[in-house]
Every structure is written in structure tokens, then in C-alpha cells.
Amino acid sequence: MEISTENNWYKNFNLLIFDEIDSTNEEAKRLCHAGIKENFIIWAKSQTKGKGRQGKKWISPENNLYLSLLIRPNCTASEATNFSFLAAIAAGEAIKENSINCNSLEYKWPNDLMFNKKKFGGILLESSLKSNSEHIDWLVIGIGINIFSYPMENIQYPATSLKEAEIDISCEKLLGDLMKNFAYYYKKWEIEGFENIRLKWIEKAMNLGKVITINTNQYYKLWKPQY
Ligand code: BTN
Image (cartoon, helix red, strand yellow):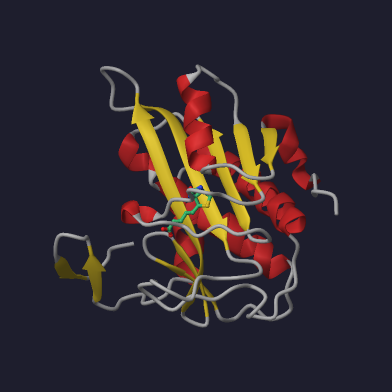
């Protein structure tokens, strides 16, 4: 199956495809450290050292989607966190476009994609500051989506896959549609800022207005998020 090029997103991104890699985020960072200045998408069919948040592993067998976007937005480190929400919307909308019933699709703060209250996708941001500046030099947005399978052991929260949610979509189709949406929202962010993206995310936010427990690894905290 071919990757959709709607919106001409491919004109602003170089695409690297690997059958297997340690971690697409690590490959993106290797490109940064080699001085690459262009936008890149690194897509791997499987990962041997996939990384999740808080030092967790992201088990990465074939037939799920693993990609990292390398971009250099003009923003501070704190503004760069906008891209976790932007990427979640890009993925969520792509899935909605390919499914008849997506009422149970939700975004969970800070960067989880949920179906029927179970996690099927996650986003891992990594960035580096320019020297003597509050602005970032580069940003890597790692996106993992369980299309076909999901981990059953050693998981903190219930997991699922798009297949289990009866959403039939290939990696290529999801990648193309996600990138089409990402390019659209990235441009919107550059022109209008974060507000409309924030509102779009809130429309489908899980636990909105509820007090939530955050596990920071060091301690548990009760907190009411201000989105
Ligand atoms: C999370 O903990 O929810 C974030 C998971 C992010 C996984 C993706 S898969 C592609 C990219 N490469 C990695 O090693 N991690 C991210």
C-alpha cells in the first residue's frame, strides 16, 4: 500500500524507512547530532530498544506504527510541549478519518491515545536547547501506535490496539494520514499559535475536570489539570 501524500506534506519532510532499528527517536537524535537541519520522519517496521516515557520500554514488534518526527520549530522548551497535543490530534483525526465509529477515542493527559479507556498509543518528546537561549534547537516527536498488537505483561494501565477496537488500517495509510494532519496543524500552530489546537484536544480529553493521580516515579500526587 502506498503512503498518502495528500496536503503535499512530503515536500517539507524527508522520509527514512527502516525494517528494524534500535529506536526511531535515537536515530532522529543521531541525525541532529550529525548537524542535519532539515525535517525528517524516521519510520521503522520494528524497534529493538523502543522507549516510552519515564524510562519505560516500548515493546515494538512488526505491524504496529513507530515513527519519529524531527523538526526545528521556533519556540521555547515549554512551548515545545504543545507538540505532544498537536501530534495526538494528528493521529486521532487520522484514525477517525478511517473508521465509522470513533466515539470511544480519547486523549489522555499528557500524551496518551486511548480507546475504550485503554491505551493504544503514546508520544515521547525529546528536545535540546540552543546554547545560551531559552529556544530549542531541535525537537523529536516519537509516536507509537498499536495497530495490530499490544503488550499484555508488565503494563501499568490496560492496553489495546486498533485491531481490537475493530479499526482496520495499515501502517502506510495511518502514517500518510497522520502526516497530512500533522503538516496542517503545524502550519496552523505557526500562524495562529496553540489555542485552537488546545481546544481541539480538549473536545476529546479523558478525565476532563476530574482530579487525577500522577505517578512521577518518585511520588504520587493528586492534581487537577488546567488544560
Ligand atoms: C509513552 O510512553 O506513552 C510514549 C511511547 C512512545 C513510543 C514511540 S515508538 C516511536 C518512537 N521511538 C521510540 O523509541 N519511542 C517512540
